[in-house]
Amino acid sequence: MHFRIVNAAAVEHPLHLHGFYFRVTRHGGERADTVVPRARQDLRNMHTVDIGGSLSLSFVPTTPGNWVFHCHFASHVGDHSSLHGSPDAHVIPAAGGAHVVPEHDRPGGHTMRGLVIGMHVTPAPGYREPDVTERRTMNLLVQKVPNDLFGQQTAYGFVLQEGEQPPARDSILVPGPVLELTRRQPVRIVVHNKMDEPTGVHWHGLEIESFPDGVPGFSGIDTRITPAIPPGGSFAAEFTPPRSGTYPYHAHLHEMRQIGSGLYGAIIVSDTPRDTTRDHLVVAGGGGMPIFHKQAPTFLLVNGRREPRPIRMIAGEPNRLRLVSIHSDEILSFRFGTETAVARWTPVARDGADLPSALRVTRSALVSMGPGETADFSYVPARPGPMQLEVWIRRGIRIVLPVVVEAPKKEAARR
Ligand SMILES: [Cu+2]
Image 1 (cartoon, rainbow, N blue to C red):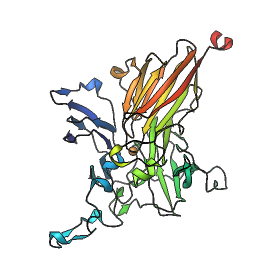
Image 2: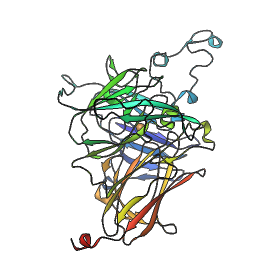
Image 3: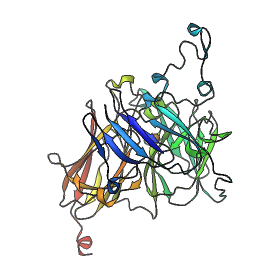
Image 4: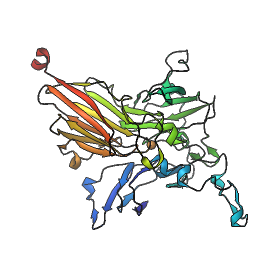
């Protein structure tokens, strides 16, 4: 499939393809259209197209079912961006009573509107979904806690059940718990909705089957469609992650409210257990309902806090930084360095996929990412001292995550 996209709107759009990676073959602006050489085409499931920009992308739809290609700004795929519900959800008398809302826009259908394209990938004859009985099971609860965000707003959050007893009704984590998965190990993530409103969870960027992909009322094949998880209900997402990398997971229903209020987290798929003393995860997202039209104040949290806990590194040792940008409605900028100088890091992965060697070029440690984008970098600190990772939204909210570089211990230095 080849898509050619022209952004004629006065705002950028972080575009996301479910189910498959694509390659950007050309990108353009007001004055030029640039061909991307094959060696520099990385695998992406997101690309932010600039104002007045254009984009050519190519992908092969290898897994059958229903898939969406959409803008990842929550305000661009919700009720705000459509005429849904006005003046009558079904028949508009002004149009002679003849305007009937399309089938997909009826109650019980999916809730995405605006900047979204639905695609049906037809199964090849004889296609059968993988049938695996032995799966590692995780129980992921979705809960709400009133007045838990800055004492004002209801916090929404995930929590993993450890052992037999479910966690307390008022326990949540923002961001959600890190889902540490092993590549090629089948999992069953049972999502239990303990809230008073429906939800659905998307495992963003994982190349899995359509049914567990998590778009309520749309994901699936033929008549087997993912339902919204009702209050008190549960949904078993069964899949086998095929690729090691860094991914977000998040609510895929009423995204503005649910992601904005805390229903987001990170998935890390690995081949071997991670050494978390030098493999660092940074999840930047919202902490409260964003305000439509992007007026301040728009909340931002880094690892769930306005004053995030420091990361520790040892001089001379290689570190991996995994950055996840998952605010519901804002592009986030990241800068790593000392207070006065930008460091240089080496990009190693984007959107969960390892980068080709032509793109693993050490450069200034600055990156901007739309909602859902992830980027991994390697960095070897040269000397001990204070460093920092800054994260900000253009209109001014800025959070500083301290990075403490320590001198190597003597044993470690001798090894
Ligand atoms: Cu996403």
